Amino acid sequence: MKSDDFQNNLLKHTEDFRKILAMPSGDWSVKGFIDVAKNIYTISIDTKVVSKIIELMMFPVLQKFAKENNFKMDFCKEQYHYPDVTFITKDKKKIALDLKSTYRKNNDIVSGFTLGAFTGYFRYRDSKKNITFPYKEYSKHYILGVIYTQQEDRIDENKVYSIDDLEEILSVVKDFDFIVQEKYKIAKDRPGSGNTKNIGSCVKISELKEGTGPFSELGVKIFDDFWINYMTAEMSRSAKLRKPPYRNLKEYLKYRNTENV
Image (tube, one colour):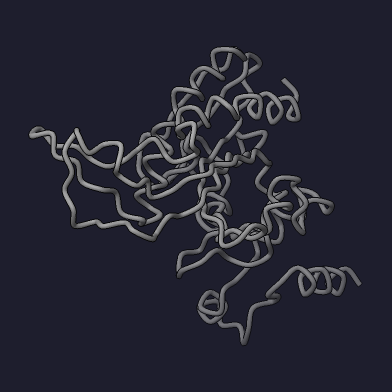
């Protein structure tokens, strides 16, 4: 299967993902957690909780997609390992798929995805640490991204409901949309949020849907070289450098051009 076919064929399952995640109203079909006494506890707006549940709900559709395309499918066996799913084609090519979710800040902007580490297995591509197969064995790296809207108003996390109250429980998220892109096409030239050494994504919905991030025209080789050699301020100090060689794509291109003079 050609790489473009992978993207297009997975996008054909957009409505399957939507039907699993959402009610006809667009609200999330998940209302909370239930215990053996049939008490329902509302879900926190915490993005990590929402993301994990969404990921688990989408797996049956991914299994259907794999069966249709004669892929062997390997799920990630450890938490925080890359990727979430490995597809192996009939000709033994490996395709990485990471599931990500983010919330809208407005009609045009989302909070953004983190696209995996730029250290560890990303730099040492023979490494088997924190990755299903060594990075170099993957022919393509895709992101299946879920975009949603948060409903923070009127959520009472302290209230306990019964089964009879199911219809009145407000879903914490709604209005799902989906993107499938190769990782480099939606990556930006800055790390993701927090102190972790992760690659950040574009935040404009149009760039995510169309795959028009800053590396999209430059290609995956430039993306790889940029992030393999990228240093945070802490990493440059550890390497006994006064400052990182570059901090963004503009400085990187200048740095590489200077090196080649």
